[in-house]
Length: 392
Image 1 (cartoon, rainbow, N blue to C red):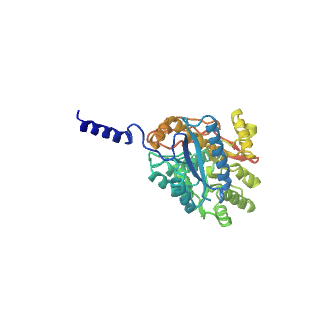
Image 2: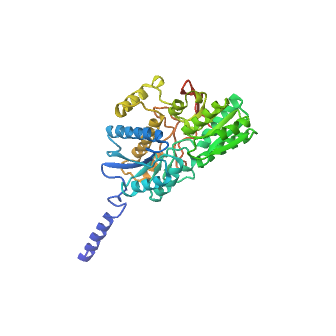
Image 3: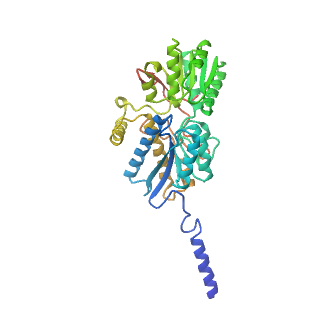
C-alpha cells in the first residue's frame, strides 16, 4: 500500500470515528455521562395549584428515591419544574425554556389538557419523548406516535364505565349533564351520549359553563326543572363543589357523578356535607393512613418528613409518573435515546405499583397505559372504593 493510500485510510477511519453510530454515538439532548434531565409544566400559582404543588412534591420525592437507589443505569435523574399557572400561553413559553435553555431529554407529567395540548407538538417536533401528561384526555396517546405515551384511562372511558355501572346497578334513567365548555367537557358529554345510546336513552338535560365560572345557579335550575335523577359533571374540584352546593341550597338532591378530574381528597374537604354521596371514576385509591399497606405507610412517612405535610392522591400521581418513566429509562439500558426509551416503556406489561393503580401496559402501537377505572364515592367525608377495576 502506498503512502497516499495509507493516508486516505487514516482519514476515512477518522471520519467514521466521529460519525453517529460508529464508535461514539451522537449526543442526545439532556443525557450526559452522569445525568438525565427531564422537565415538567405544573400549575403552582394558578387555579389548580392545589393539584400542581403536591404533584411537584411527589415528583421530587420520586427523584430523590431513584437517585438514592443508585440512579438509572449509572446516571442521576434531574427534574426541572416550570410554573405555567394553568395558562396555555404561559405553558408555551415555559416549554420553550425547558427545550432550549434547560435542554431536557423528555417532558414528563405536564399538567392539564389545554396546556399540554399547546405544548406537546413543541416537544415532539424536537424528536423528544412526551410522557404521561396529567390529564386523561385520549389525544395524548391517540393517534399513535412513537414518542408520546399516556398514563391515565381517558375521561371518555372513565365516564362511560361509571355511568354504565350506575344505570345497571342503581337504576338511574334520567341523566343530566353539566360540562365545562372546552375539550375536557366535550369528552365527558360525548361519553354520556354514547353510553346512553347503548342503553336506548338520551340525556334529559344538557347545560354548560365557561372555564373559571363560579355561579352555577342557572345550570342547576335547568337540570332540576328537567328532573334529572343523576347529573354527570364535566367539572374539576371547585366547580364540582359549587354545583353540588347550589343544588343543596335549592333543596334538590339528585345523584352526581364526576370523572377523575374531581377525584381528590380536597373535593370532600371543601364540599363537606354538600358532596356526600358524590360518585367518581378513579384509577388510584386515596392513600388514607388507616387503610394503607405497610409499603404505602412508609411512603407517607417519607413524604411527611420531606414536606412537613400529609400526602394526597395528587402527590401519589406525581410520584408514580416519575417512577414509571424511570422504569422505561432503566429498561432502555445505558444507551439512552428517545427511541430506546420508547422501546423500554413498551416492555412494561401489567405493572401494578404499591398504591394499587390500575394495571399499566404499553406495546408497539399502543401507548395508552390503561382503560380501566373503579367507581368511588364520598362517604362520611372520604373517598371509598365501591367496585374493582372495570371497563365499559
